[in-house]
Amino acid sequence: NAGVTQTPKFRVLKTGQSMTLLCAQDMNHEYMYWYRQDPGMGLRLIHYSVGEGTTAKGEVPDGYNVSRLKKQNFLLGLESAAPSQTSVYFCASSYEGARHSPLHFGNGTRLTVT
Amino acid sequence: AQKVTQAQTEISVVEKEDVTLDCVYETRDTTYYLFWYKQPPSGELVFLIRRNSFDEQNEISGRYSWNFQKSTSSFNFTITASQVVDSAVYFCALSENTGNQFYFGTGTSLTVIP
Image (tube, rainbow over all chains, first blue to last red; front, side, top):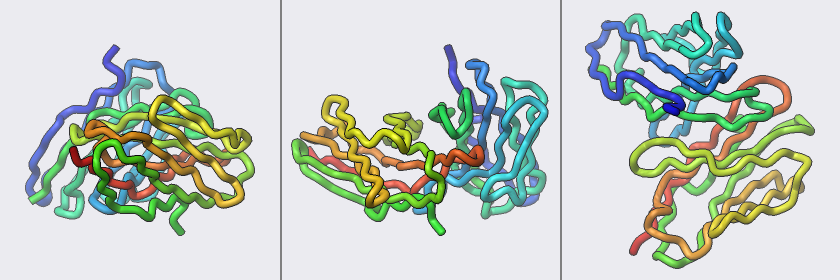
């Protein structure tokens, strides 16, 4: 049982480049989330999804796009990377959503934008 | 306004000492859920506990205990007889009955010195 898998683990981008982070979960969870973690700021929600085909904005959505075409996958895209997007990105999933279920996290993706 | 406040940014203790990590939350909902997560140096986020707002009983799990007090909007975490393996960043989080988001504190970095 892999849980939540994020790819890639590390990435270095130049300003203006684009990339997609992939999150896959094998727990049949409805809810999926993308967070970024920055020193002194904790975890901040970028976008989330309450089911296949749905997405919603979180606290810091600007500069990111997401898609949930399949229930098990949640993609995070950066169309034109900026140094301010240097961060550690975590994907998470939960069964019943924030009201009931804890989050299961992936191991994170460390992104550096130069 | 910050919904979850972890005022202690960094704490250092000597092995075998007890340590309490503070968490203060803010919500208008009468039904809500509180969580603690651990992030060891390896970087993954590990779920520790979930409490709902109707259950104010303190919980103990081995050397870990949690004190939930609605009167002070606090959900503090105590580690008894700390060990080096307890060194990690600990996050407190809140989810409300309305909405699908988790709100994380900024984390407390605990270092246990051998």
